[in-house]
Image 1: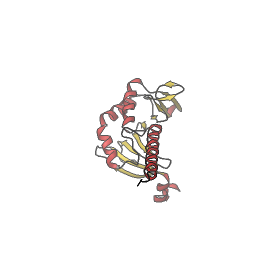
Image 2 (image 1 turned 60 degrees about the horizontal axis):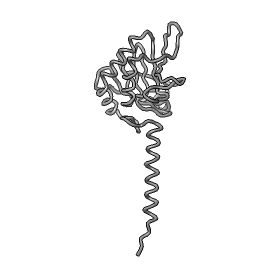
Image 3 (image 1 turned 135 degrees about the vertical axis):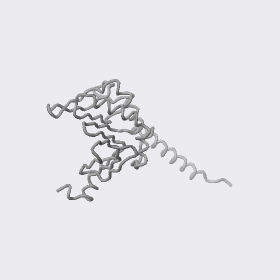
Image 4 (image 1 turned 180 degrees about the vertical axis):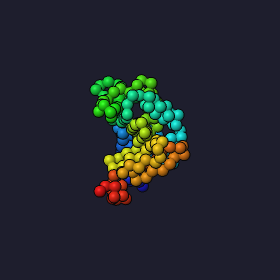
Length: 191
């Protein structure tokens, strides 16, 4: 008696397509190397901070030595180890001097590139620095972002923050930013 191999064949084809779809998404959206497929918890953020504290401190010290009020390094397109802009394989950052109404996009100093790439590979998507605080986005969707904030003046209190919690290192905080949830939880902030 011959067994019907059709169910096994169909199952094998479906499994191959699922694996192929996962690999394509992995490559397209660069989910590898400690990237977060789901929203990272407080513990994941704390672990990221502790495991990369020296790297983070170095980057923020270097950014604070620049002559700007704020600096933003956003993940736009990551190709061959750097953000691509105008067909140049360079990493760029947005800078601002508020007193002069000056805003520009300039190359990241060469000595910082390797450190920022290392942080990017560990899961840091965006880096923002100002004279008062520093922010690392480690996960985001259209409606929510999560990450780590450094603030010497205490816990951040932005109107769209729905969760802020002190991490294991002083002045570093885990945050969850969500406009819709904040509007529901704190309607007085949006009047």
